[in-house]
Length: 355
Image 1 (cartoon, helix red, strand yellow):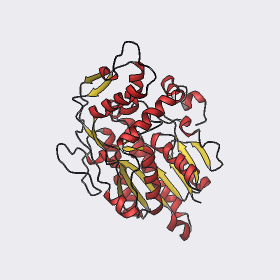
Image 2: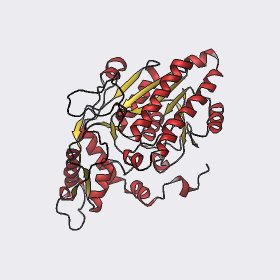
Image 3: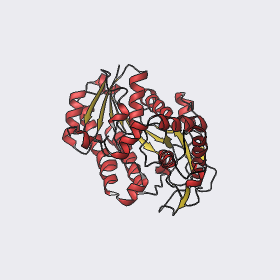
Image 4: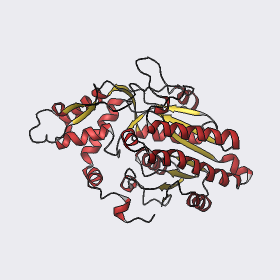
């Protein structure tokens, strides 16, 4: 049994990872999360009663608090997912992205380095810090037929992707300069249950159910590789357990789709599965509305996940069609979760949780 600290463990990907660890491994997990708007303890309700699950509200930019947490919990592994992650929000207000994704990663690295140096040699040799990042650090593939590999140059386009790229560079520097044992993974677009409704797939599902417009940027021709979040969680755990220190692993779903085709597919599934349409809506596709493209919008991302498949034996289990259907059906059957998100009653502030 390992003791695993998951920063950002109440977020979309983090909570999927925690649910996987508790349900499928013998390990002990401490979730450290600031509970900003995207952190939701409802997403951890299924594991919250397990004796191997623990939660601490924490801002990773609070260095002394991070030091105290590491000394108290004594983790064997840190999986760092705490991040601001929405491109549109980064365009409107980049400061919080700089603070969390760059300053927060630096503060965590410094605390982890102090903690790692305090361990005996056996514990030091077993310790790892796994930094979870994004394919957006590589920039835009445009009209090329290529794929992002682990050696693709960094060319971030948005404040979000630039802040994540900076975090990646810091992690590599703390390995090279100080010897801190680290790994990095870069993933493609995630989707699945418990995703905050600002992201494309849940936004389209919930807007459609409410009879609201389904906004599509530009011509909708932007291409993304889609990765089901539960597949991603299994890949993250696999890398953390057997990945090579100092290596980077790209995690993708082999599911390239145009945004407009994703929206159309959701509409088709809703036509089949939704109990009823909103008043005045004959077909869900009628709600599609093209809107002005966002600044610096990358045209295409696509991941070459060959390395993790060859070296670590991980393969995604879901196709895009199977994963999307599961996702739509989950939102249809869990209105209590997303309604609490929409009305704000899920938030840590309203729940009165201690900071």
